[in-house]
Length: 95
Image (spheres, helix red, strand yellow):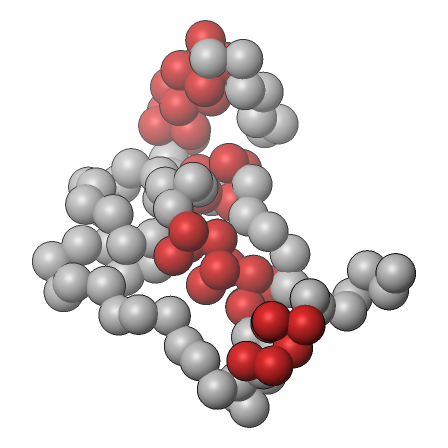
């Protein structure tokens, strides 16, 4: 199977990476993060597990986001704190 080929249901809706898609992500409420759809402080990471964030990120970068991506806009101290917290749950995040 071609790894770049979308499943039939996605193919019917259109490729999310191009402007010809017949679907879009539902808008998120105006009072939450517009990148991940979650209510978090601007200096905290995006919710890597949010489906909104995953699909919006994929549409822009043609790959699924990692925790490193979700942490990218945070300062070094916040990134380190989150890496330690994620590690405590068995999730390793590369620096």
